[in-house]
Image (tube, rainbow, N blue to C red; front, side, top):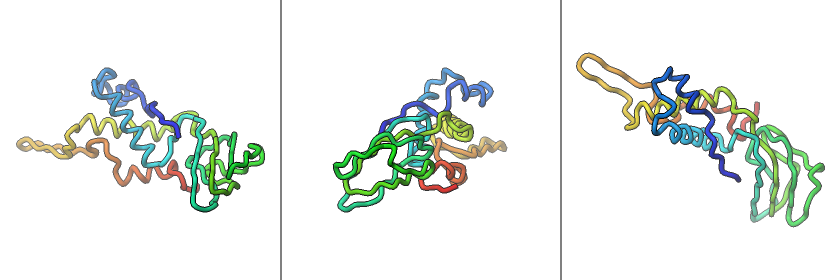
Length: 176
């Protein structure tokens, strides 16, 4: 699988959302946007966006059905199963789950998948995660000075239980 490096959100989007509290030129902003994006991708089990051509290769001890680890699959362009090159047009696949009609022990499948644009809810979550990491770089969730107490809803860019609910529609294996 290819390694994605593009963040789901931009520095300008962060500056706009934070109303300038986190400026475009914040020294750690790009790093945190990339980290937040990677956190989301890891939680979902695939790259999500943008559209990308990937090659899935596996060798197993016995023949099994081929499941492509992605959603929003646009096409399967090549497949070799147990040394036999297949005609791409003959391959059936489910665009949202990745299940195919292929079965074999040695599998190599090239396919195109991903959302053309990053879904808006993932842009928002990326900004929230990055802002949490930038706003509380040491992971502090509560501060008190005299009679003033501040509690942060998010710390250190970590996913919370409610975030996993928000990501459910993008996790591979999820059926709408």
